[in-house]
Length: 88
Image 1 (cartoon, one colour):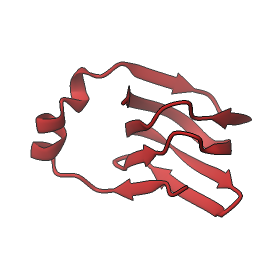
Image 2: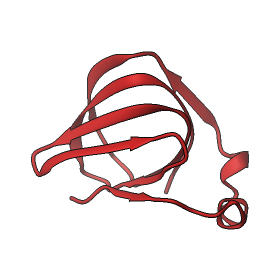
Image 3: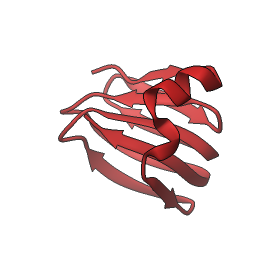
Image 4: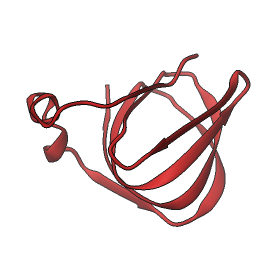
């Protein structure tokens, strides 16, 4: 189960409609999470390490991240997060 972290251009973000997606915020914390559906998100603020059985993945402000359905992980929010998100 791979997490994908990308840098997308502002044109690509607009094309995908990212800026019309809902916004989610989270304070510094650590919690378990399981993805029932694929999720795409774009970080407006923050820094996170997601721990999986296959290793840790880090991402931060400006990253576009895709999580696969079925992924079980631990979110370790290092700096408060604000992100646009979309379930597919």
